[in-house]
Amino acid sequence: MHRLLRKLARIRKVQSIDLIEKQDGTWDIRVLTVSVARGKLSFDLPRSLTESDLHTLNKRMPAVLTVSGVNVMIRQTPKMRIEKILDSILPGSNSKGFYIENVVAGGTITAGMIRNSKLESLLIKFASLGICVVRMGLGIEDLEKLSGILNEPAISTRNLRIPGNDSERQLYIENGEGHNLLVGEDELEGAFVGCFAAAVGFFTSGKEGTGVNHREEAQYRLLNKRIGLSAIGLLFAASASIFIIASRLHDKVDVLQEDELATAPIQEQLAEVENSIALRTEIISRAGLQTETHFTEYADRLAQLLPPGILLNAMELNPVSSRSKDAAQQFDQGRISVMGESNSIQAINLWMNAARQLDFVISLELERYENSGDDRGEFSIEIRTE
Amino acid sequence: MRSKIDYKTKFYLLVVACIVASIGFWRFPVKRTLDLSKRCNAMEVRLLHAAENSRLLIEKELELKALDMLIGNDEKSPDFVQQYLLSHVEKNLSQSAEIQEVMPIVSSKEEAFEFGLHRILVEGDFGSLLSLSHSLEFNFPHARILAVHYHTRVDRKTRKRILTGTFFLRSVSRLKPDNP
Image (cartoon, rainbow over all chains, first blue to last red; front, side, top):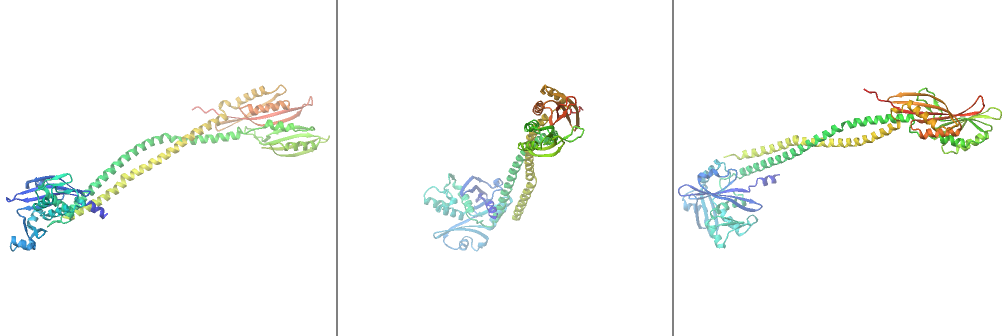
């Protein structure tokens, strides 16, 4: 999370402002927007302003200030202590009251000095304009640093090069301006090289220069802006998605509700039809409408087996079981009651044995046999069928 | 110059606002949309059930129609069935047999149905009675044969044994719905 915040708070675009104070006390101001993206530096909008145009500066973009001109004292001397150089220019002055930048090259030292009060007045001026200054300096170290980068190309500056040979490059560094600089495919006018060097110095080091402690403020500004914009963007995208999804769901629900209303009576109809079916099934069962009957077959096959000597008086297929007077009169289903006369019990036995062999007979019992004289006996037989 | 604490405070306020907005966003639009989605799914499931019920209803209605056909409509009232029965017996009875008695219909009404019990007494030889039994069993769709009782009696005058067959049939019909 902290890493993400740091990444979000990273400053990737600055306006590099070169403030050159002229002899008459007016300012010549050069402004260049420099950004770094995916390790590549690029510049945009180089423009020259006067002091009265300062309000046109972008108040939301962090600023890198470079001060030069009459108030900046630059000396190139053999290598010696800074205090001595300062003393040689302004005898008896205290180095604590100055902001000093120096570059040592070979046996010489190039030093630039400006009074802290001057820098502070400039900072107050920019703060009153609402511009966040993240770095401030004299540009001497930045130019030296740019030179170092050019000699040892790094990933972040691989698209940097100065046209011409090494001597020309040295000349450029000495003069600070004068030669155009190629940044990628774009050529930067020599007058803005100082601005560009200051911005590169800011991107490649964390040094803020003197009296400047606005980096954190600028970072928070950026963080607030990026998080705020991201949050608003996310909220908007999510709201739009939710709105689209919800409206589609509402449409779907409307359609489904209509369908549900249309299908609501089905359940009732189904229950009604099921009740009707149950009632009819019971009626059919009670009426025996679906019962398979074999009255003719059973009567015929039993009669065929009758041996001589047996006379049947009655054969009831499904005899009456309850003599109710209404239509619900019950019959004993699956029963055959046979009554008759025979002159010999053997004949009855013979018939019974033969009848037992019939496939539809489940059981067969001689219920009664009564000898009525004259060698004749009355009998009754009960047969159970499938 | 603005104080950096202001920016920090602003940042923390922004973070809090983002959290509150996220919670609010979750609790209201997102949750409601999710509820709507769940409702939608439940309705779809109910509609699927309804579609299944609709299919079932068609099947059940067909089953009901088949049962109604089996039972018969109001045109098959016991009186009509009795007439059909007499006509059928006359047609299918051989010359050696004759109808002795057509007993009155016993009918009862239950709910929307009318049950009728038809009894017919026929005299004749066994073959004729069997033939009649067969035709009533398989070729008379208006009523179901419930029982067949064969009996013999001795004619007082001729002293001959005479075979009688009593056929019991049951008819069912739907009553005509009362007109409102």
